[in-house]
Length: 154
Image 1 (cartoon, rainbow, N blue to C red):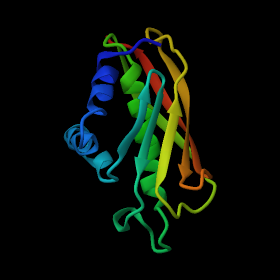
Image 2 (cartoon, one colour; image 1 turned 180 degrees about the vertical axis):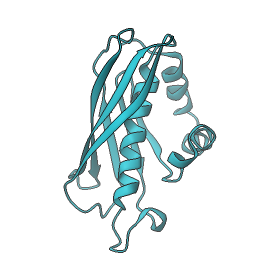
Image 3 (tube, rainbow, N blue to C red; image 1 turned 135 degrees about the vertical axis):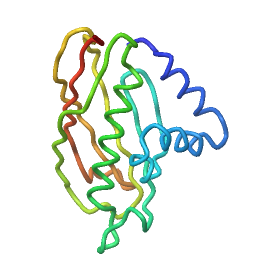
């Protein structure tokens, strides 16, 4: 999978001290709601993205664990950004669904991982992306399938 200009920019950004603050500012401009969980870049490579999220009160529920909506937000952002980092300028995408399974309570900070196989960006198709959320004990706390509609720009 080729490195797109956006992926190259993210990888350069990750070398800068304070890159996660800059990432969140950019995200807040582009997708304000997604920035509310304060995601951080962990790893970005062609076809692979990993985002982290700290456990803090603003994203916790009444039981003191990470809220299901915050986890869903993280998973959707991870999958969408993985696509955005690999898509050519001649194609477009939009999420069309999200199927989530919560496996256990998220009591610690977490990270979401999404891998993306090479795609034919110039054919209209629905692509299922697998995303998993792992806690600090390397236990899967949630899994999701993000359904992504991709195709050529018209």
